[in-house]
Image (cartoon, helix red, strand yellow):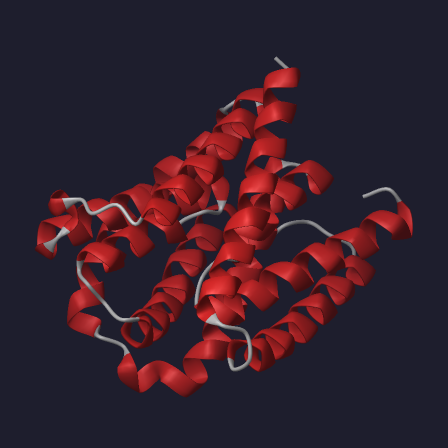
Length: 242
C-alpha cells in the first residue's frame, strides 16, 4: 500500500463489492478481486476478498438462515473442503504473472458462462453438486472467485433467486472460512483494516437498500459489466508481465 490514496481506493473497492454481494448473495469477488489483486497483490487481494465475502455472507445469513437447505449444501461444502488446499498451494507457488493471467481468465470466463445462462446436465443432482463444489473450493482459495461454480449449479438445479440467496450465503461463510483457515488473513495495517471495514459496512447497508429498489435485470447487468472489466484488466496486466 502506497499511502492514503491506495487505502481509500481499497475501501472504495470493498464498498462496491459489498454492495453487490448484499444485493445478490454473491458477487463480491467477481467485482472486487481483480482490482484488489492489482492494488495489493494476489495473495493479500484474494485473502481480503475471502474475509469480506465471508463476513458479508454471515451478516446476510442472520435474516435467512431458516431457508438454508443443509442436505443440498452438504455435497458442495464437503467437495470444496477437499480442493481448498490445492487452491491455496497454487496461490502461494504459481508465479505472479501466471496468477494474474489465470485470475483474469477465471473471472472473464465465469462472467461469460453466467451471462449465457448455459445449462450443463452434468451439474445436476448429487454428482453435479460435488463437481461444482470441488471447482468452487479451488477457485475460491486460489482466486477468490468460488461463486460462479455454485451459481452454475443453482441454475442447473433450477433454484429460484429466493432459494439461491440464503444457500449462497451459507456456502460463502463456510468456504471462505475454509480458505482463510488454509492461508490466514491478509497482513494489512490497522488504518487500512478500519477503512476496509467501513467500506464493507456502508456497502452492506447500500446493498440492502438497493436490493429492494433496483430491478434484478439491471443489477445483474451492472455486476456482470463490472466483473468483465476487472477480469479483462487483470488478464491484460498478467500477459503484459510475462
